[in-house]
Image (tube, rainbow, N blue to C red; front, side, top):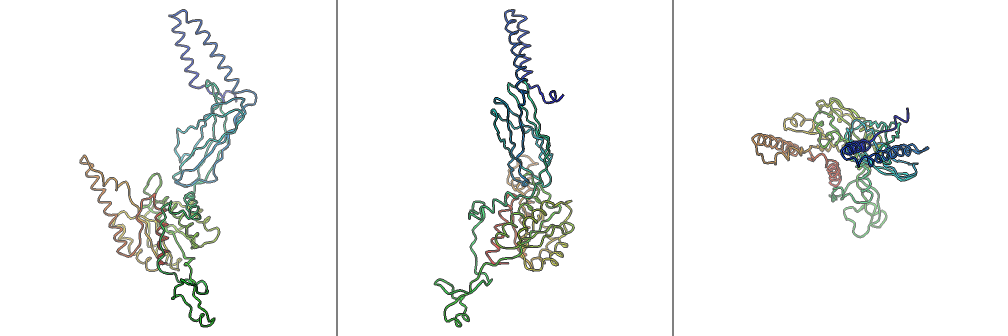
Length: 442
């Protein structure tokens, strides 16, 4: 029974049978072909028997192993690898059929390769998950062929579940380039520091080139030599990511929702803040405020933020900015940088929340993220050939104009903004954070 279940007849077998049938039909009209067709028939039978015997020769088999990462990165290409070990005495052809998670919707992916005698070979591929959660891989099948008339199936019956987290690939890329001073490759701007920070570090002796205004005259008179105050860049400043988990963040772009882009950006920004010796925290809000993590720079802070970002669930309800303001007023006492990930499509939507944004901006540095609708921008630039195209173009131009009114109103109220396409959100958020640090606004 196990033999029958593992044996498959390939298309090549039926093509060969069809060819033999055609030859027998021709031999009915051409008698001289009959003996030649009989020889072909016996050769076909011998090849079929030999192919089956080879596939089931002694203890020959293919061992399938998965070398998958411990977790997946949302929105990124994740490298996956399947390792094959052959104990066959000759080269064989292999088709791999992986049972992918239903979230990926991969229906026609087949991995094909050849493997030599008693060789171990790795076959790699990439997947791009577009939602956080658990991805369940089923069984993995390997179909082995020699002549191609039959195939023998080997199955890895062990299922595997992988958790998909916020984009830690982007975070690691930023961290690697930051340590090697190559952030410009990602688009991170080098921003000149404006003025001097006021956080005192220590007193040291004067050297040529020091600013005279930093001279400490009391210490100089006491020690009878020129001493200056040494200042350092202000550190341990609280940076909060406020993620709108409401209906406005449900809009999809390139497979991900705006909420997913905000979550990925939050992870990278928090890591950047901790690298700059600042304190990183976060919260999400919709009808109520949840997933609050106090701004800290302890060793396990990034792990806490990553776990919270992984578990964010939402019904995409209408967001209550009043509850957000009340929560921040109660729990965030020190002046902080609040990176507000939300989206205002119309000036009316902004007007309903402007009072709360102004009150937040009185005690904190508020940066509002507004997303570009790149599809509408492209539609507004297209020339319409039909009447319906002209109508669509006019409506698209109206929405694009509304977005510019939103940005202008935020600037008029003294609130900083990031107007960005979803795919460039992470880079623009880090640039804005570095700009605020360099200007000494915190």
